Amino acid sequence: MNLRRRYLRDRIMVAFVYLGTLVVLLPLGFILVHVFLSGVGALNWDFFTKPPAPPGEPGGGMLPAIVGTFVIDLMALAMGGALGLGGGVLMAEYPEHPLNRPLRLVANVLGGVPAILMGLFAFVVVVLPMGGFSAFSGSVALAVLMIPIIMRATEEVLRMLPWELREAGLALGLPRWRVTLSLVLPAAKGGIVTGLLLALARAAGEAAPLLFTAFGNSFLSFDPLGPMDSLPLKIYVYAISPYEDWIRQAWGAALLLVLLLMVTNYLARRAVRR
Amino acid sequence: MEALRMETENLTVYYGKHAGVRGVSLPVYDRTITALIGPSGCGKTTFLRALNRMHDLNPVVRVEGRVRLDDEDIYAPGVDPVVIRRKVGMVFQRPTPFPTMSIFENVVAGLRLVGVRDRDRLREVAERSLRQAALWDEVKDRLNEPAVGLSGGQQQRISIARALAVEPEVLLMDEPTSALDPISTQAIEDLLVDLKEQVTIVIVTHNMQQAARVSDRTAFFLDGEMIEFGPTEQLFTNPTDPRTEAYITGRFG
Image 1 (cartoon, one colour):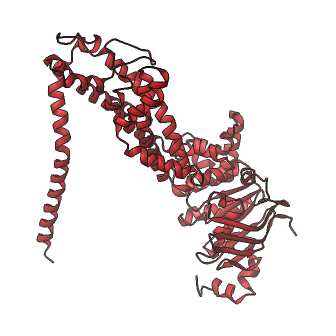
Image 2 (cartoon, one colour):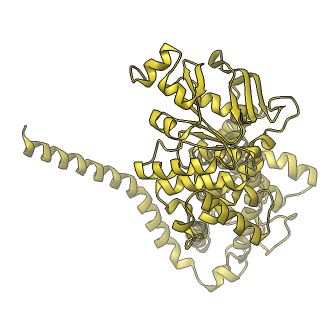
Image 3 (cartoon, chains in turn orange, blue):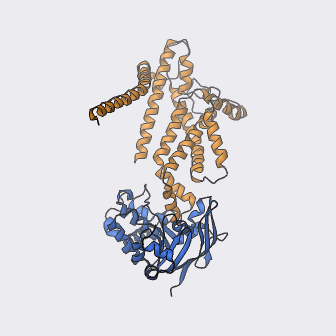
């Protein structure tokens, strides 16, 4: 038929696809550019090495919050990762297990719970019994936030592997747990790490669950059982403060958070590719 | 007359309510090749997978009747399916190299993953199994390369070598050449004939010529039932059941 009209229509459709891509990418680009421009001025030596200055005084830095972010998020990743991976493996590899249905329910419900309720939960089950705010309780709140994300990501990645992989292992006379551990999980390594990173990125940006758990701390602390600071908490507190220098530093903290996540992402991906 | 290695007695396999295999009694003789033929959906693969308890993982499948391996009922309570599968190995329709492992690691996976650490022994087993699978000369210089880099025919022979490495008594093969080109198919058929000196083979095949070329006995399945079983030559030249004759002369299936 009319070949030229078909070519034209093809080109118009392709143009729409590009346009759609652009529309989706634009907000992301704006956010990144804006955070970068607003935050880059705040990043200096003091920002990384000093504790915060007293309210109203210019200067000071984010050292306690930077250290705290690492401590809290890594503890959360350890706890949430272990439980989330376990749940995901059970759902994908042992579909006949009686715990499957309740587990799926928990994953679905937990996935829809607002982040601040995770903080409330940790407040009730950790902060109150232990008698005070602590980095550990913040990690528990973030871990609970991570669990459904990791569970679902793990389950999905494992389900994508061909069923023959398990059967080939079983046919060699390997027990089921060995097939899961040595054949299935290594084959899904890349996807699992992506799931963990996704959960980490999600949790690392949350301030709400930390408000009444980790609580914040203006002094450098490595004690997981005491209150600890974190970048999202600092951003929250500084951004709504009346002090210009704090607002500037809030932007700096936001930029740092974004950069940290990008670097983690890159490193983890490189590590699994090997 | 050869000795019995395996035997099924009135074996019925249910998928939910539907019986995919009904009342099959089949003897499998030591160090022979038994071919299972029949049209798609006739239950031959379902039957084969019952011989090493591969159905165990599927909760909707129920197996009734008896399967004996060396006079032991493999479905008796207290029998560990893992032990049964050590003795009764399986090769699948599609090659299944373990994607994260090298050629060497693939072949010795069945030993290494249950704790055999002795390097010399593993090397020995790898060479022996790869020779048995007629692959040694092609891969001996690149044992540490990923197995997924090999061609389809080579991958299938890796799967066979891997199954042989654990020294099974019986090897079940589910259409092992259906995904392969004629040359690879030829290589595997030659291999089967050599292998039966050491191991008992039960092979499902769509390809009647293949059954005729390699097997000692053939069972013809239709609609979940075993219609006829006998020496391959007799079944192909002088079948007793008219349905067998119709199938082997190509009138259906």
